[in-house]
Image (cartoon, rainbow, N blue to C red; front, side, top):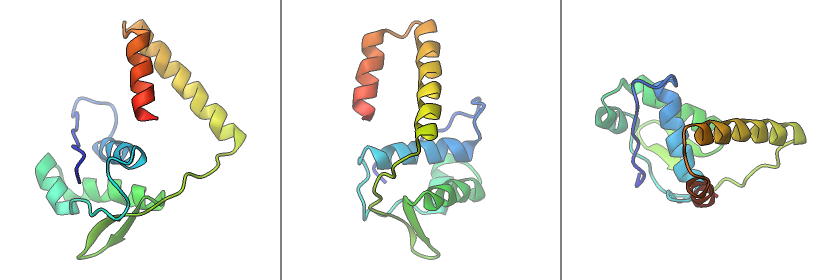
Length: 123
């Protein structure tokens, strides 16, 4: 995988979720293309210094979301996944979360220009 995964042991988020979130971000942004082979569970676990079950849980979550195909002995293959059409309630839920996150960033002093740049990069 060309994207770098970093974990924060002081974060309130479980390590498996941090891994899944970072890999998902790389997949959605197409930094990792469909057809790519990700690091094996054991390789990534060794690189990060975590239990292999932690990485396996992250990969299972991404497979359940349709991003990965998992095969024992082969590893994780990135699938070409079309973006689903979310129901209106789901769009509203994400809008609320984004507004809260942006407010938190502004309260911490992150400039609007930096937020715009980050949002554009992600999109």
